[in-house]
Image (tube, rainbow, N blue to C red):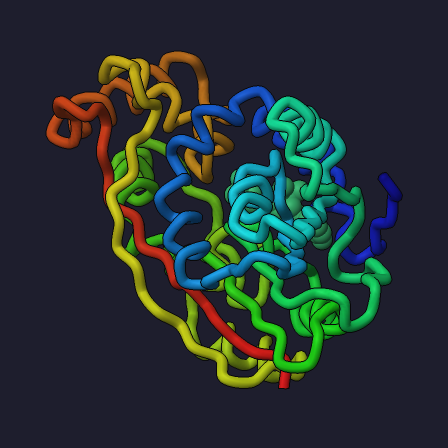
Length: 287
Ligand SMILES: C[S@@+](CC[C@H](N)C(=O)[O-])C[C@H]1O[C@@H](n2cnc3c(N)ncnc32)[C@H](O)[C@@H]1O
């Protein structure tokens, strides 16, 4: 693995190499179960073929890189790129355990990494491209990796207000605690690719063509195999609500959690805690 972090993304590098990255690595199985249908919809859309070379940007613990590696055998190579050492360690261990010889991983900042020019048939990402300080220049750099006519397929969140799996707990928390100021429209963060006009501006500004955004509304299973309390506790440990609750007193945290559990009983059934998500599948081509 090589290390390369631009100063502009230093804060993100710190975040994903610190407690957050270690948490994603430790909870990789549950997070992958939760996010699997969203990534698989993107992988289906990308229509990867045997023999293709594909780069998975912000690949984290490698679930989508490994799924792509399967699709492009024989002859194809999947390269996962991520800024988080603990998450990439997990990815590498999984690839070794699965005997996925055509999946490799590089520790690097995708916004500045010197990719082998015109080497990839496609770039893919499941929720790994919304954290660049300067997304247009990051995508211009990522585009250098693509062959002429190469394609991009990105799964990103639509605005937080359209995502009940996040909003429902935030609305309840807002009744009891002072909420943080919302992120600015150009700030990096999980919901920063929600606005189609912004995504199109970024990708076209980076030199991509044929930018299209297709909305997906899918149910996900949160904390599969847990009872209602356990599944909600899992949910409250991820996403924006995690930081909000962490700053409260234990008593207030307990009050908010308990109200969220009561409200989410309506979302809990035979398949566990099932909640709605809203994503874009963004596709584009290199010239
Ligand atoms: C929400 S996680 C998604 C991880 C993975 N794609 C998944 O779906 O499980 C975002 C990922 O983007 C990575 N990331 C953030 N900024 C990055 C950058 N500049 N270059 C490469 N990876 C980055 C993080 O380290 C993290 O693994």
